[in-house]
Image (cartoon, rainbow, N blue to C red; front, side, top):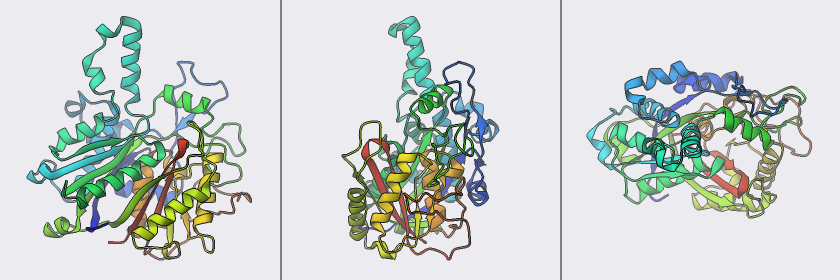
Length: 406
């Protein structure tokens, strides 16, 4: 990375609440916050998944009141809520003149699902001529990023990436590139996703979610021998990226330094499945570390995207073993606590780089001999020097990031 990039603000909203303090408390507890999904429409399997990490409605309403939210889809409201928290954390006013050179790069796995359902239902029932144009404008994947820009008057580049689990770290890479190329002085980077009953039912039918009848019940168990699937989550996280010079000029304190972020691909992966080539992924990750001035032996903390899916955790464990053949650093798996959505990984990686890196791994109790990986148990750790974040996705997408304390 040719010009130093720092992270000066972090906003988060999820199942456990909103804000950095509640995020830190959630990670430290190692306890997921689960709510029962509405199954009344009859789309779920009778013995299928029942729980998810859903955002408390009162927390969202406090950050995005009705007058502000009236033309926003649900994920747009989540993204704006996280934006408000991130700007406050960075010490920035919500509509200051400096936003003329502020860009936005967001990631989403599914986009505005609820609005899309409403739009398609209107088209099917009444015909395309009767469908509401306002529904369409909020149904596209980049609607949350657009609403963020309208909210804070950010006039710089505005991009949205849809690369499933890998999208959030790819967004981080693109945000840093915009700064180092001089296309923006500041970039809001993040991820947002919502969960509807229909999406929950579909994920369950694809066998992506933890099963109620599995040993130990419907719980996400990253890297555990008994893992049966993820716990779907929803929420948003937004990080404020700035060039070090811009941050210093306004006297901002940094939460972390972004040393680099990059992507890769495993072509062995089918369109709806996990890849089978962890060595190839490890080689791409290693080249990225070297390109950004580090080696695997220098890493002293890993933040993994493992969420408790049998094949996904197996692929990530294989990649980490191949990348760290001699000594595997402590591995943190925050999605066991926060649920499966990209914002949780981003927020946890930033907090880890800032020194909060001793969280237990929710759901883990029995090591899987086939993985040869035991995630961190929550015992105190010294402050890290280099934090390595990894995100692997179905269909072969992959991304990594290298962070350090400020």
